[in-house]
Amino acid sequence: MENSALETRPPAVGVIGGSGLYEIEGFENAREFEVETPYGPPSDLIVGGTLHGRDVYFLARHGRGHTIAPHEINHRANIFAMRSLGVRWIICVTAVGSLQEKYAPQDIVLPAQLYDRMSGRDRHTFFGNGIVAHVSFADPISHPLRTLLAQACSGLRKNYHSGGTYVCIAGPASCTRVESEAYRLAGYDVIGMTNAPEAKLAREAEIALATMAMVVSYDCWKTNEDPVTVESVSAHLSANAQSAKEVLARVIPRIPAEPNWPEHNALSEAIVTPRAYWPQETLDNLQLLLDRFQ
Image 1 (cartoon, rainbow, N blue to C red):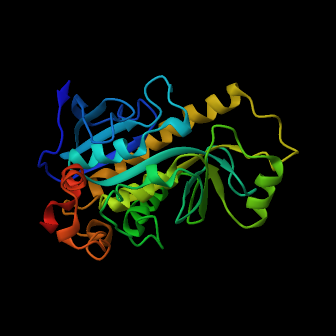
Image 2 (tube, rainbow, N blue to C red):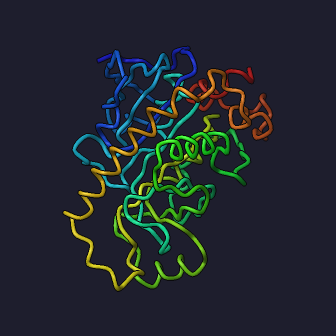
């Protein structure tokens, strides 16, 4: 186990998802990293290593053993910890419910948009406390990274869909049937409880992020389906995890080595507070993100 915070590291790829995703063929030199952040500890120890020569870090968003509920996830600590390890690209692997007939269980959806229905916005930004920044978020998902994921899914002949909208609700309870139907009729595609804050914080941290939304069930709008059971969801989760590992093994070596996409300079035009007004304590916490503006 290695404690590593705020160190200069080569640009790396991060994966946030379920535990065990790092069990990919070709993943080598695995180590556990305990990372301290100004926002507390991340969900778990981060497993780092190499895959085809690329530095890769895996984080279980719900902790090993799935002990952290969606509303308990410390997203700021998770993203900050990844950034402190040199991560500049993140692939989020997340279980979702389908809001449309065409997305069946075990399909992969690569959303292009997010609809955020969560609260607690103070916990979903690094800024405030004297330093104000408004990052551009019109296109919340990295188009180049989503394109690479689509190419990997296609090459592996996965049932995938590129595009669409992920609705993010607070949880831990699922939405009501009328809410589910409303989202479906509005044309949204999948529903989950974690991806919006991950994407917002990644953009503030100048990390390119894309999502592999793994369908585990039709959401409750679909009344003619058999009832969702723990057994059926577990079976789909297992199959989805295997698919995700296959896609990750193919896509990670194809991610560029240099972080020069638009997301990697998201703060360049975002910070509105003049440098002279930055409180020292806030600057100390955000040194990792603001160092290039000094």
